[in-house]
Amino acid sequence: MPAADSVHRTERRRVVRNGVVMGAATGAYGLTFGALGVAAGLSILQTCVLSLVMFTGGSQFAFVGVVAGGGSPLAGAAAATLLGARNMLYGLTVGPLLRVRGARKLAASQLVIDESTAMAMGETGKRLQLTAFWSTGIGIFVFWNASTLIGAVAAGALPDPRALGLDAVAPAAFVFLFAPRLRTAQAWIAAAVGAVVALGVVPLVPPGLPVIVAAVAVAGYALLARVGAPSTPHAATDPDPMTEGEPGHDAHGVIRSHGDRSHDVPQSDGPEGAPGGGSTDVPQSDGPDGAPGGGR
Amino acid sequence: MLLACVGCYALKYAGMSIPQRILDSAAVRRVALLLPVGLLAALAATQTFGTGERLVVDARVVGVFLAIVAIRLRAPFIAVVAVAALGAVLARQLGMP
Image (tube, rainbow over all chains, first blue to last red; front, side, top):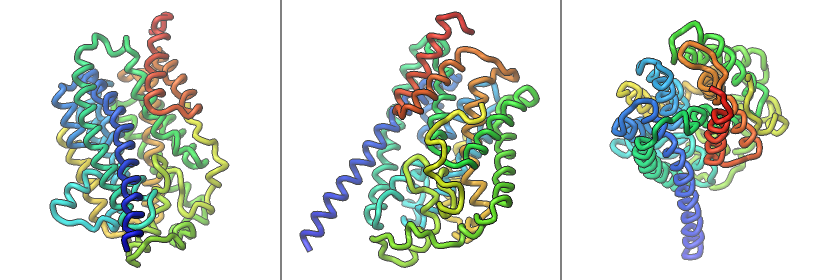
């Protein structure tokens, strides 16, 4: 069917274009990372290696942030790894979709980040989801690494990062990253718990450890919140009504595994904002819309 | 640094490899959903007020506050970052540490 083919080609082009745009937008963020990495005392090479090998923005900023604050690289590694834990959840989401093995699985794993997962889940139909994942993933990888190098080199020419206000950039970037996720009361409380606990232990433990203590507290809250919300376990096993009738899924196994996970990553950049089942928790749309700064 | 890189990659790879049923545990899911928000908030807070093992209020607070205003106005990432840097620079020009 030539008509269907050309429709598909048009769709495909749109998805690839979106992926490249996402890559370029995220790439600008790499400039900041490159500059901050060098400002934190890493060499240009070390900064670029982080972007190439770690390749997960939040973790890279966390690592650099801990090191810049005088923390040990080990504390930075712990914070970065904790922050990268969400990519594991994303792998569960896109893994069944990609169904890759060997070298392709090694490559695909590296590209499993917020944006590639979100873009894939934003499409309907397995082929377009695959296109979205690869185009976004590769697009971001290329732009991110190129801009990291440029940022790192340019920062070397700058005298004092504080004089340029760069020390306010990283915390602002973190607020930007979690602000879209503040769509439920629980997300707000998690943010407040994290911020308050971290600040509370800053004078007590070495730099870098406050975020880890805060992470433990947030995990504890998350478990307690589950006990306090009796409808939630039900929602986790319930088929998601949003994806039940979704068109474009051919293999039944894919529908099942995708449907179970898809509410984790429905919108770009806000995967954590949508709790299980959507309707059983706090109504998403009623939350304080995109307003950041909880817990200050 | 190498450790962090390996750790981050191992997590990505593990996610691709773990059987679905483990994450069907509601407890694991809930922790994984709320942890990034709490962790990012903790990072934002400590990097706004933390200097070594002390809490201080300096020009960063002004930059981050203006950035929050920009985020509420739905500014793109670049604009938010620029506002933060500019805010801190202006605050220092006005004499804040």
